Image (cartoon, rainbow, N blue to C red):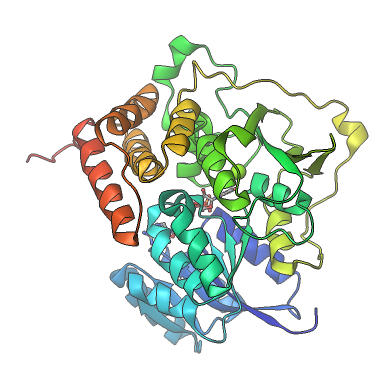
Length: 399
Ligand code: NAD
Ligand code: MG
């Protein structure tokens, strides 16, 4: 690449953040880390700062930021440490930042992701919740600011790679009739319905194909991850919900497909390793090494495809209904899901209860139109409040 490109990594201490740094470490002459941001994992971010020498480290948590500041000062680092949510948004908007990896988990990533879009950056979007909750609003901002939006989610990155030249984010591409998202099926693909209420957080987070953060791992176990991805695909590729199909593909080799009017289907294949989509997005339209081994087709031998089970996994149906309802429905779905997943991880809700809570919240809060960001934030807050009323309080909450 001709010029050294400077990148801000939001969520650098997480699974996607660490994979991003692993790819960048292979190409020190092509990329420079300008900003590392996370919530509170100060030891991890200090180690990252010592290796990559960013101008700024941002930790949302103030105490953690103070510890990181002291640790970096002690080793003579020139990196400045900031704290607070706002600092994330201003750091990604700086003029010398070319690209922003949006890899904070959940709605917490919305403001800095939006800031990066508004500043017209190349945004590498892993934080699907930020897109699902804001819908067209975020896509309109991309257009208005002339930002680039490259999906990191492996399925959407696969589709992006299979789109015709000249595809614009949010626009229906010519000749595309349908996209097909593949799903691994998660850890409970063949678990009996009667057992599902009793599965533990650790079982839910033991994904057969991908190593990911705990929230998205639970989403993969309920198939809500695929539901969020259906909504994500409608927005990124300008498709109706009915044009986004889901097939279970346990090998996780085909990462998704695009169907064209002439009967062609294009697919992207690769090992299930996020460094591939990350490298694709960092270098696009060029190609660089990611550190991922190419596939051995003979060793794989067979590829299987089966329909998703909507009875054991009602979340996919809930997400499709929210996609069709539009407006604030996806915002409500996402917020209720975040609250329910956290409650499941804290053992205040059982696995089956996750989709029950989301269903109740969606039934009680009617979808209303989204005209401004305030509509999104209000719906998000209302859905969180209501979801909590359906969940047992944490121990000691009434003490
Ligand atoms: P993770 O839990 O491993 O990491 C989350 C990161 O976000 C951490 O750096 C954490 O410090 C930061 N963070 C959490 N809350 C924050 C807050 N309130 N403010 C600021 N920072 C905060 O999660 P992950 O698996 O890396 O996933 C990140 C995002 O990427 C999610 O939206 C997920 O859906 C998406 N994604 C992940 C994968 C994957 O393979 N891990 C694949 C596709 C999409
Ligand atoms: Mg995915």
